[in-house]
Length: 387
Image (tube, rainbow, N blue to C red; front, side):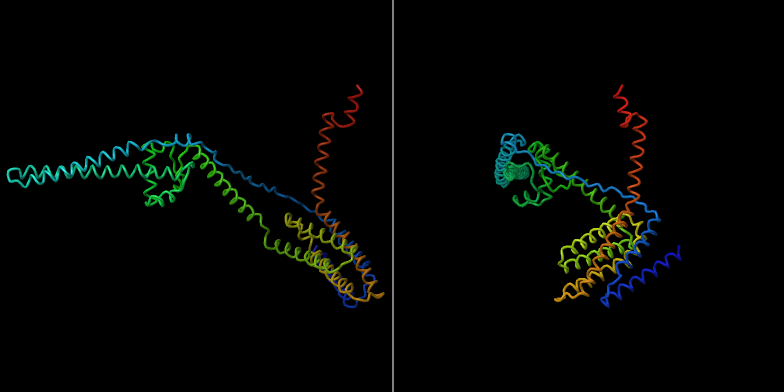
């Protein structure tokens, strides 16, 4: 095997020398016959080599989206309790606290009278402390009710809002608002209140909360699938030596395309386009089935470089303002060589798909055998119909 490889490498270099001499001397006589004989010999050798393939499937995750349903004002109203009790209670506490503070002042004045000094002073202190507590509690209740109305106004017809928006509009910190809306929910002012998992959004409806949770779970699943897909791509990424071959193949295809752009003739342009498509498919197959790459060595080391060299020579001659007999003969020889190369590349492409075709043929053979055993082949069906 090593000796055969060495012999073919030497033959490939000889062909490369022949092409170089033809390009440099502009003498393309018998070039097509030489290439044809050599390519035929290589294909005969290649046809004796087995090729195996195994292509993995590539699933793609779906994407979906949804919107919350519109709600009527009546439905929105059912989501909230009433803060009237808090407001009234707060006002009463403020009034009561004020009265106690006034009583404390009166008791303090009475304590200045010697005969009432001690008891009146203690009474003044008691009134003052009780009044302060009532005032603080009343002010807190009124503020609570006022902020609840502000939250509800900011929500409007919506059933979700960011805590940052609420905090900015009531002049409090996000942490303060987070704790307060939870207390209001526990107190029944928000009957269906929820925080999202990240605790950045306040949600006032069970339905909307379910939608947020479903969306979050879908997003997490999509991210998980994307991470898994990236990991799978990383695992399936071609090995460095495989990627090098693919890159070289892409470079050859690009050079063939550039040559085609330089050559205006429709007939030869069609041949070059056909060659570009075949070579592109060969390297696409090599990317998914790197086991065939060793069989592409001569294609990359000799035939594709030779092809690009011939196409460049053709483009240079075709660009000459005077097309003499020698130029026309050389161009015809190159065109004939392109036909030979296209045929060879097509046979190579067909060969690397041989195992797939054999697998399909085997499956069909098994299926036909099973149908025959069940009496369901055409002959058997015809016999049954005659009964």
